[in-house]
Length: 529
Image (tube, rainbow, N blue to C red):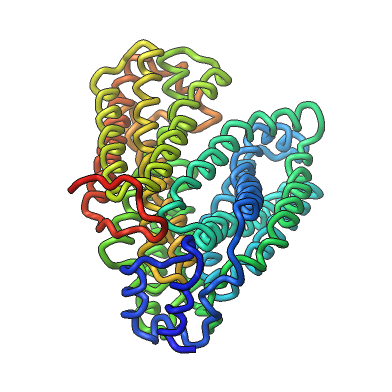
């Protein structure tokens, strides 16, 4: 079947499977050595999905995503119990680090493999790896086996997120897709808030292994809901030779970066031989990956995909916002305990404004994208407003707790607007057979930016408070007892200022990003130029 015949079949399909004119033009203009659709399956779906089928698919995808999100947080409160059972407290942090390392490294890999072997195969593989890792963790006879099980679990969990977002892109048009991002954000917030509570309950009243056993029925339920509907989902993947060398180089570089950010300033000094060696490995691996990608016929992550007037700016805008939000969430408990004298549980509740209110911003933006033509203005105004709120906190702090939480909630509301716009813009701008690759790369760079920002905010606090202060979850009480509230307020002014700068950078990226017409139903309200 020729290229023109394929595009003709696509245009004849249901409204929610249409490509925009710009995306179709971009697809036809890409050289065949980059994307060869000659052996691709038909782009038209086997049949239109009903609203009930879309809801069933969405429910199963949200359940799968909940699994991946939950296991980033549920283990934290059970770590003391696990450490006592295995008699090893020193290496407990690896139970969390192993999951984060492997899940971050494989995100772009699973996204690319979904474009090669299909969404159905890769969602089964990722959930199977996740379940196998969960069983290994639950039955672990030692801490080492538990850590290895967490790494295996992370391989599956890291693949779930990009595949879920890719499947949604297959069944919902770009214009309608934004409204579903609020559901995804809600899942992450629910997992972030409920995970530690659930983990503590299992460890205290049942057994810590229940943290992992609970994943089995949830994963089976997700597959049981999803697989019967997968046959009706449009097929956009294209079988081709896998660039395994490029994938290995990319994963190795990601692992090295994450180790530098995890160990630097914590386990090892930033200028220690270990960190310097790892930093050198990062540079070497990154250069090798780029060199290989420029010469490979069909590279694992085509660098051309990361260029243009949409993708790099949308990725950067989303990454800046994600980094600021995650870094603030990580460091705010210290501020609450030192300045407002909240307990650990109260500090956890006080995180809800920044973690949960962003969902409302994402929901509003996603629904508005269905009705307006100039959709990126919502994200520009939202992130600009969020930057203004962060700057106000930096200037006005210390504030009464109610006013501080109010400004923080307004900041979170604004930053939530960027997530639907950035995700949908990326998926709307790339060819159909490479949506998985682009989505995986987006999640990868967001995770890296979050790690960079957490490390950067920690460095800011260390400089402001003095180099002899150690920051970390176990040392929060020591820091609170040794640093006065005035010093902590002064230090956090720099943190809030840095967050304001990152949100400003996010707004500027969306300003520069080209605003392409979204495929799907015509908007009912077009904002004027």
